[in-house]
Image (cartoon, rainbow, N blue to C red; front, side, top):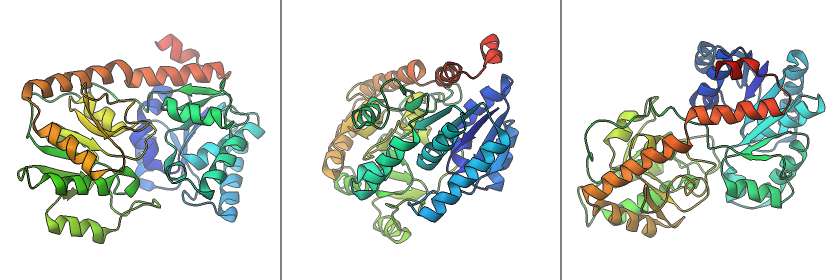
Length: 377
């Protein structure tokens, strides 16, 4: 039995479904632990996983709530006695690994991004580092999604170099995210797929759109994502409504299947302050859409400037506007070359099969029996 855990059930459904299906399909019993979410529970159970509701406060460091989370994880693991604990997001990673280690259960946490605590360095950063150092002490493997995050953790003594392994994101199915027929679509249509939070560079996207519109009035700047996300840097609905009223951007609510929006875009944009490994950029590349992204960890690991997209300086609306200018003046032939390079890179480096194989090897190295997987392969 393997327990998979994240701070929200939608995280497991949206980003870990292929891994769960692969483990279930090769004979593993999989238990998905996350805060209660009836809609996501149905989808997880459809994958073959058993759902276990886990009270977990995803925000802040409140001792009484965190103690309740630790106790709930301990009760779950004592009752289930799984062969391994796989986790994502900070509290399942830290507290789950700590509890699993105390019970002799191999924990394989995935640091899929360092988040606000490392972007805006303060006392919270120090607290987060100490939590990581303590929680990961007994983990046989700690996954990172880019080399910068891994090296930072090793240099700070939060993990040992022998524990740290790179994993190219959560993996995607290149057949599902396939390039649509036809050539370059809707020139000057820029799509940003993101939660509407400051750390994703939303305000820089708006500033760059405002700077670009006078020269290219037919350019469209579309922001698709959740407003009011549970994040310390969430941007209020009133501010978003002001941008829409101004006419500088369009906003769309998130949808389950983003492929039609990606297919209609000329470029997919992510001016994030820092990523683990951006799934949005991987999805865009798989569909043959060049990206415009900031030159930061988790973006530059996917996008090479002038090859499969464009990179710009972080936290700079004018730098992003300059990238928009480069994009709108790009010939169709150059755009097509970028589109093909984007697809080729994703297929070779970020496929689901590749990611799942790395997980299974790590589980086997940690002493978890995986005979059905290897015989199936």
